[in-house]
Amino acid sequence: MQQALASIEASLQNLHRTTLLQMLAPGVPASVTCAKLASIGLESSTEIEVLYQWHNGTLYDSTLTLADYWMFPFFYFSSLDDVATEYEALNVLDRWERGWLPIIADGGGDYLVVNVQAGVDDRGVYHFRNDFTECPCEYESLTDLFVTVAAAFQHGIFYVTDGQPEIQINFPRFYELGASLNPGISWWSDPSIA
Image (cartoon, rainbow, N blue to C red; front, side):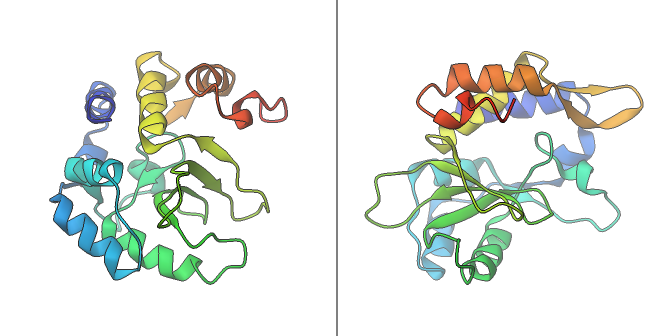
């Protein structure tokens, strides 16, 4: 996963996402991640610790737009403090699973969540949508999520154009890439998403 995260950061630099790169918080030791998750009754994992050693999410600046925060189209990377706050707020919802950790957010109530419930082998990344009842598994792991994102940048599927400062996406190509890199996930082969 470290290689994928480094590749994403390099791609953001190449696309001149200077503001976002400045807003990515310094990473924290694994012990900090473990303690924060323990404070909300959840276990950590090596993947989560590696992610937060890279950066501790995104700092907040009220002068920026939501698109300024996007690490990839429509989503930004939440800090450990924000993850804990959001988790406690979402944990009261009937369709929220107890072990879901809302690491990636869109600012409108949708999240990419990783399952960290104790004793569960499934460490998949699910897409919790505020307006939908289904929460499909989109990646088998955080590593698979970031490998897919890194590849989308490398192949020009995520891009920036003149006059459009936010990161854009070529949806058909992204679904093709997602299906090829995540063959065990049926969501990517669902014709209704293309």
